[in-house]
Length: 313
Image (cartoon, rainbow, N blue to C red):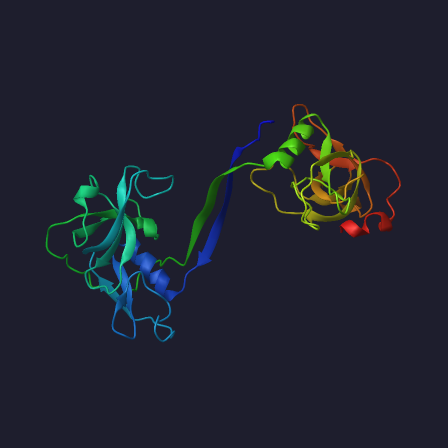
């Protein structure tokens, strides 16, 4: 049985959010070493604060300062911290009800081991040395055996309030392409494009998935397609991606390779972006050592008739 490929992949993008008055006050307070909650209609102080009452759904803005000390309500030990977590050594994830709050805040608790953690233990906030107005301004919680700390008297009015945050959303995973796509990728290494034919509808799918998406039956008959093809649809890219050394504007297109029943995508080069069109005949351009075409360029042939590719739009 041929080796099935696998590779680590990362999906990452920055998520930008503007803050309303409640979240702005909460995060700005953390920057100033102050914890603010918001009073709900039932009298509870919600920490972290919510912008709408969980009972009545009405907007709430009655900010209330709570203490940086509190009590662990429940916890779980983290034996193997992952990238981006609050601490690099084993720690406890804990729900902490701060003194004066009616709800619990989830954060890391720095403790020497799980035997040192228990429900009901007293803890306090360990503030980050550099604070920017984010939840990470709380570096973690730590055990505390003293009296509740004094409040500062903060009301939620601060100079230079935080009005927005940027959070990085990231997913790390291992991708295994499976039998069909492994064969497809290996063929690309030999500068060939291989699809699989459905035994029912007889369409050739590129890249292959191991089953026909229309008929739902398994596919295993390999068919070499291309290398030339036809542009079916396209878009002009005007925003430069930070990890691609390609000058904008450029064209990204769906290309129906000769013999294929499904269009794949690729970049179009060797022609001004405003001259790319539906029906343009193209061929792959390979670079030394590459496992896939760098881009597709015009072949010089007459444009394909619309009826030859309209089913693949």
